[in-house]
Length: 262
Image 1 (cartoon, one colour):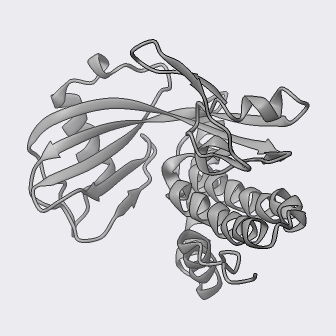
Image 2: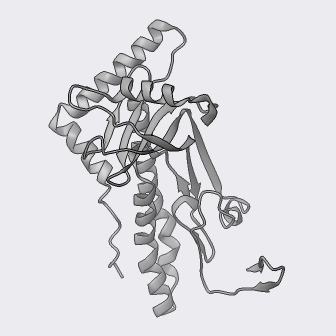
Image 3: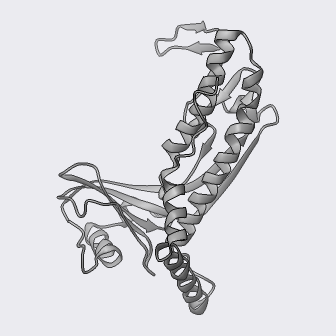
């Protein structure tokens, strides 16, 4: 690998194996897609408007709230710092959301008889666009990509880090075997092992996002149909043992590849 440092000096690094874990804007990924690899993408018709707030905790649990006006998410960073999200238009900018509008929408979407969203000083505002992407294959010769370099998911299902760890569980023992035994054959199966789980996770994130976010229809009755359908789907999940078990199983994401297989 040829590189140029900040001071202008250049050099060359050589390695038997290269792991590209350089994020969603990965440069290493281009060496795969530029040689015929696929980069499949999906963009969602909504985004999250996120704020950081100096405020007491609203609730000890994460709150996912769906409302005809849109989705809201209540989470905790620390005892005195909270992170809140509101569904918004992907074209929105932070200056379109006044503090008054933020609190009005958070209370509308997330308040209940048991919960009132805690208010405080807003210290950060940002719009997070929703995108999904998968690279296939996740390797080329002795280059392997993992985590956001290989795939991205929307934040609804909280699967980004979980999926990255699953990649490493698949890659690490095969890499160790290759180094210790001078046998790279097991590395050939890295993509075949990782990608089925990647696609299952993409489906879960897509499903959660579609179920919890409102998308306007062509007219009022179409919008009402979509809202009622989503609420029926959510009711099926939360009011049945099978639905709750499916959600818990997929949300936790415990089905990692065995890391001690070599």
